[in-house]
Length: 401
Image (cartoon, rainbow, N blue to C red):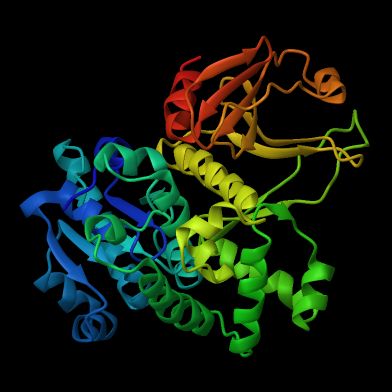
């Protein structure tokens, strides 16, 4: 089953000779590109060891057998192929200049390990490739494709496409396998992490702290790992798109603003599994529920920005006295949006913007409460409630301003 994705239009409109779709394994990259490419593109996956060996040993012969247009899946495994792709694209450009015809899309690629991709792509394909980032499904994409999916399911199992296509799959088993095969093997080994067991402990501690201020010293104490190592490991997870920092807004006009970032998992299902939850119902009444919902809201915002190629900035706004707005978004038009995540099945009480915030942002007239359920409703002149299921539509409306 093909699930329509919000990023589809951006990819379809791209005229680059190389389109590179980066994101975690099993988030739907190759399925999306295969759907867009149609029968004109040959498809090659480098999970196939024989093809991987051929592409690395004799890249010229590989391209003779698999002439573009071609879809190449998991290209981080074939670093020796990149110079040959560069040569091929440059040759096609020279021919097109002579004829006056635009160069079509020649290569569509996917990659799931940014650690292995960084050097090869930057060095070999600079100026020839358009990058796109895809993560797991958004609430908007899931709700659009599956009418009967409950928001509790989304919070519990995240946005992994296979878990919605095949409802017989156990999220617990699926995500356990994912953690073992992708995170503990692929990422850890390619990053050269020696203390694999300790890495797993840090991963679990991070999941328990998703949506919270990041304290390296506290993490180091609880894990028994040096703070500099913890920081390095978190950076690895951030580069592989599994977690994301939310940096605080900084202003020289207000020294009361905190400098400590927050950290969020990009998929709540992964965070829930690493926290050890095996059932949905107890999760909703647990102390972690609020932070997990905040994580869901953050990922929805960031995926919206990535899927539509928005030049938006998102920050945490927090003073040292504890006044806080979860998400401060600055759009490419200069519009500022203040959002707070409030997990409530009932109508949320209206709240006011902090006075210190109003002094910095006098043009921001309202705070938006993103709620678990309910309907979009104005709670007061400066407070609007928007359910997370409608957050995509709300952001779309604001992007047109």
